[in-house]
Length: 313
Image 1 (cartoon, one colour):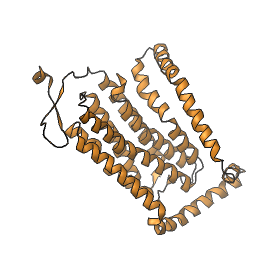
Image 2 (image 1 turned 45 degrees about the horizontal axis):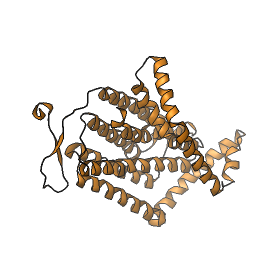
Image 3 (image 1 turned 45 degrees about the vertical axis):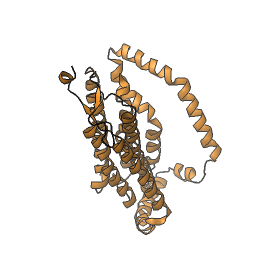
Image 4 (image 1 turned 90 degrees about the horizontal axis):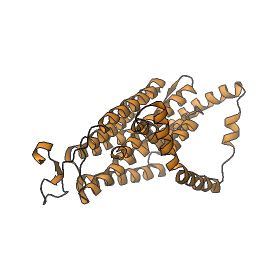
């Protein structure tokens, strides 16, 4: 069933499709067609790079209370760092870099106004009231409740019309639909072509990915060990590996590449397609009914070993 890799698949959408859209639309709206990330955003990418160790540890140890707690602690440390940085810990560096971004943004504004486009000026001049945000939140939640089941039925019907397996569409459409707010937000901000807007979108997406590689994986690992869930091989292994791979690729592009171009965005799109096909193929491998047994009942953290099918019999 698709639930074996649904959460990691949806998590991978943020750091591939959403981040790819941010890069593609951001570079298309700029001249030259490149993006320069602020030092604070590059630091976030470095933290994302390190956070991929959490799913890698889960792949190595299986369900483990220790790794689960480690993932949650890493997420809490990331939150503390983010709050301290926003309070002025990197104010000097940010101020110096803002000067360069301001020059780039001014040049883009001049080009836009010369072309007769004043839409950004009107958008920036008005702040939306808070009550509208809550109204949109309630409306969105209601739409999810009403249309979630019809969406699944539509996917099944579309698969029947296209004569393909419904799971194939589910691996591509369902994760994208669940992460559509992040995708649309990144497109909306990046289309402005302003360095500050693109950096905000990029930072939001990287932070969301860190949440999934640490907190999401940590909670999954902790409850798997606490409830003694059966480790489903190879579905869990491939799902976690694909999540780590997508996060690693996006973090490397953000941290190691001096200036991001449209090619990096298309690379992330291609990575999403490859990982989707890989997980679809793996999902058709019969799940192992081998029980997951405690390797050592007295071991702190409760590591679990996966027995080969022949040994289990």
